[in-house]
Length: 353
Image (cartoon, rainbow, N blue to C red; front, side, top):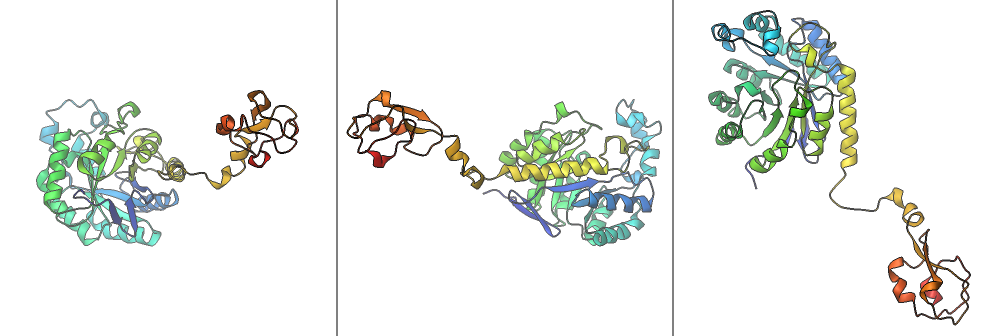
């Protein structure tokens, strides 16, 4: 029996093996500095089937060192912005004064609200707003002091593992365990925007499940919904995808986000997969009630058989439908004596001998 819980309550829902997949619409920076747009995104996320509308709470001076970034020649997504990293972060900050209004709006709409905190006061705000869980982004997995601070708040923790080695993940998990927090979801993630499907490595969820005996999920930046489907099939219980109203809009997160119709298709597809998964028992289901006869075979009279005839192999055919003696008893019937006349092409029954 592992330390971490195998069922976790998130708001008024549960996640675990016997519960539906929990979907997070990561709004991130896609509200584009507009409170009204943030609310429109929440409405769209609810309609698309998301369980949670999630934001990110940071203060640029507390997350970015422009002095540090000025020493780098960025080639990835950060280098494509055409502005300094600090300038972009300042443009997409989620204002502290909006948090309660957005949390209340989510409650009104009927969708969970959460936000990823990137400084300690933001963690305290999450507790004040009573978010149902705290998601820790991949970039903070080595900030063990922050992991401990979050874990000790007693909220369920979702920890993304992009860019991390197994030793770093193990260290982070042990910090959360040492803090006494039993409600952890370990999220596979590839921190590229967008990431490649070939890099998704969904199977690492099996490693997390066996190594840490913990619930797992996927924070996905790959195109489409294939990674989400694969994750659910092998036991991932939480799926997070960036969410936008229009991926063609300008902004750091829009291009690798899902639009509402895409998100809804993903949710609907996963719900179908959940229905198809069934259980670990092999059973004959009701809809097979006729085909079990139509497609199986039984023993038939290959010739006209008269009363008193001793059956030989040449007298028996093995045909569909399975109305009589199963084929495995063919050797038992050979040598038996007919107690009645049996016409060619008729199934053989035990009472015939």
